[in-house]
Image 1 (spheres, rainbow, N blue to C red):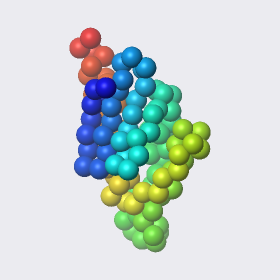
Image 2: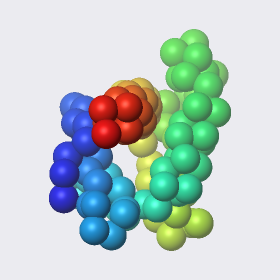
Image 3: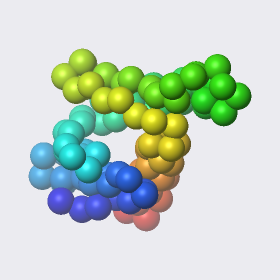
Length: 101
């Protein structure tokens, strides 16, 4: 398994044999197909971070269900920002690798 991108809290990896992606959330590693990774990116892009900053989201928490509701996570604002960075970096690295191949 090859590490694609590492952020402060999370690590994204890819297994060429199984053609799957893995995200290590620290306490749990979740396996993703490419379509599930795209769905996660879409969910993360739809989160309004301004609500966390200006106090509309009082608790500063986001609940995400992943992989067709197989996994449920609760993230704080810093973790959401870090996860957004991880997904952005992961897709950027995949794009760079596809150009170089």
